Amino acid sequence: MILKSNGNIQYKPSGVDAQKMHCFRCSNRDRSLFHTFLDTYLNKRVTYCLNCINLGRSDSARPLMMIDSKRTKEACSYHLDFSLSEVQQSASKRIVEAVKQGTHILLYAVTGAGKTEITFEAIKYARNSGKRVAFVSPRIDVVKEIHLRLTAAFKNSEIDLMYSGVKVEYTHSFTVCTAHQLYNYIDHFDVIIVDEYDAFPLQGNPQLLNAIDRALSKSGSVVIMTATPTKKMIRYVGRENVVSITRRYHGKDLAVPNVIYTDINKALEKRKTPVKLFDLIRKIQGDKRRVLVFVPRISMLKQLAPVVEKAFENTASVYSADAERYGKVEMMRQDDTDVLLTTTILERGVTFNRLDVIVVQADEFKSDSLIQICGRVGRKTTDPVGNIYFLSSCHTGDIRKTIKVIRQFNRGKTSV
Ligand SMILES: [Zn+2]
Image 1 (cartoon, rainbow, N blue to C red):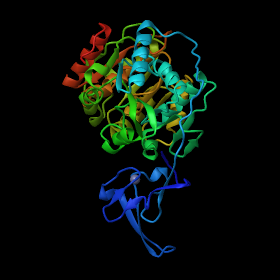
Image 2 (cartoon, rainbow, N blue to C red; image 1 turned 60 degrees about the horizontal axis):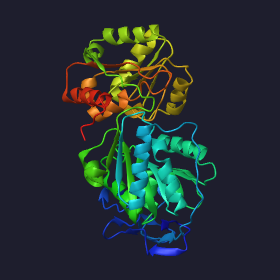
Image 3 (tube, rainbow, N blue to C red; image 1 turned 180 degrees about the horizontal axis):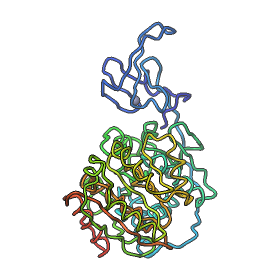
Image 4 (tube, rainbow, N blue to C red; image 1 turned 45 degrees about the horizontal axis):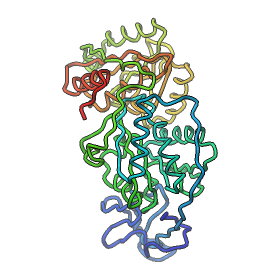
């Protein structure tokens, strides 16, 4: 079923139980995430949920309405401009099998493995048998990109697209949306494919993770896709249901990071030139390549950006609350920027040409984040390797783990 304000069936007499402080839409019970005010029109106090406010107000004054929809079969087919490699094909078969059996599955794939296309056969099977499919990611930019790729491949399918503020709705049978949108579905989808399962804000948000289970039908399958699985994810699907892909689609090895010892924090404090960073940028520019410079904190980014911008032309910086964020990323994509300083917001989901990567104060990063960052280079067949530099004041367990995981991938192994 689908919760909808203009639905014709009452699901609950009110969206929020103001006594128990419980939201029936998103299951929020955190008292700090409710707001109560005196509604002068109704002449009573109304409590509403802040946790799912982006989906429209769920409150104590109005009923929670829903619609029921029938499952429909579709003669579903897709087109790809390339054929899947043998490894991709065998992973694809495992996912189809999981969907048939109604079991969960985790696709543990190295960054740049071509994960999305590996799910197409399972989507086709599901839609042909009348199963409802959702392709979900916690990140809006990933959702937009996936929708483009799916509509290009599944030309005859009507694919819903939903994220904060945007709603393209057909029959809710084949849906691409952010994880938050799943709050509106109960026992609805038979297949939920979750890309970037370990990304913010899904990671560490039990309510949002529960929304996946609640939106899933009784015999449904969750397909988790990640380059950095956690023990929890593996427990969720069961170890026997993990499929690994250790090679990128173009078959080349992943670049192994070079660790260079230097303390950029100290250089900034003493207002000294961060010499090793500058040397690297110069070398990269000399090789006619471009670079993403990852910085651990916004405060540090704001200190470092003017220093780098003064020394190098075509430099920009970007962080999550930056109003010009999308424009700046587009300029990097268009080759108009050579050096882009960024926080971890660009650790996932971006592909740029002729790209190298520098991580400043790599000792402040977790290995999951470092693995994603390393995954930004060498994504194109025309430039399949790239260079990665970790600038660090010391060697950490997370740096060691990152290098170990990448070397294992290159040997065709995983630690799972
Ligand atoms: Zn709520």
